[in-house]
Length: 323
Ligand code: PBG
Image (cartoon, rainbow, N blue to C red; front, side, top):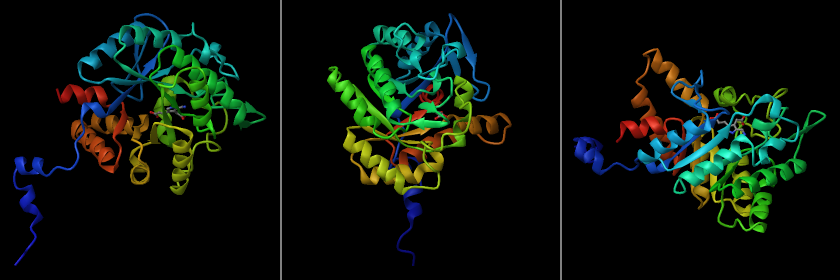
């Protein structure tokens, strides 16, 4: 006799739904958006079919259509012209520059939208690194000053969530101080807590033309072989005042998502990055996998691992398919 027959709980669609433990909803998503200079411009990222860089006028329209689909939160990344880049990323706190001008416009037009801004030097750096470079070294404490100026300018232009993606030590504490000292106690910090030195960021760097001009990011981004180090980073970010802890990339790091969720009371975010998106699109275009089913299974796996927030390029197409 078989006492336990788990198949009883799978016998119909209704029963399967009744016992389902996890579900993805549109409320879980943050949709990353790429911004370019100009007017009425929309250019597809070659390695990310379906994902575009928008000029600010079209970006506003894109945000509006996403809001109508129930996507409320956006992460904004700029593609900066090469001639505006320098060693200190000075364009990153220029209020008349593309990024901050657009941020101000977006918040004015859609005050209800939640905008997460990116705090890192790479899109603005002539070295293509997330920090100040001196003699081939990425300087930590000098970089914090730049990040502070960038984050403050973003808060002044209406940012709701600041997203430090740079991996410098001590940045969450520094940004929290700068924000609080200037009266921005309500601006949140979503720290890229466990950000690995990953090959999965390739298509993103194509989108922004932000690849490092020399070397790699291994002296600041984490070694993919390590998990205890993620707990150390999480402990620091928690004690420095982060509001969310993020793991990035998501799929090869589901164990890290689970470990942070098991050990910390803060909400855990996961970044389903550009390379993860590109692989699905490429295989689907070849007819080798089913785009929708694979996408939905991937997003569910990230949720099941313990992420309550998912940054994903699939957000809009998911929302369109689940209207
Ligand atoms: C840079 C940054 C990167 C991503 C987000 N912010 C790339 C990098 O660290 O080189 C990658 C996102 C993606 O691949 O989708 N600060």
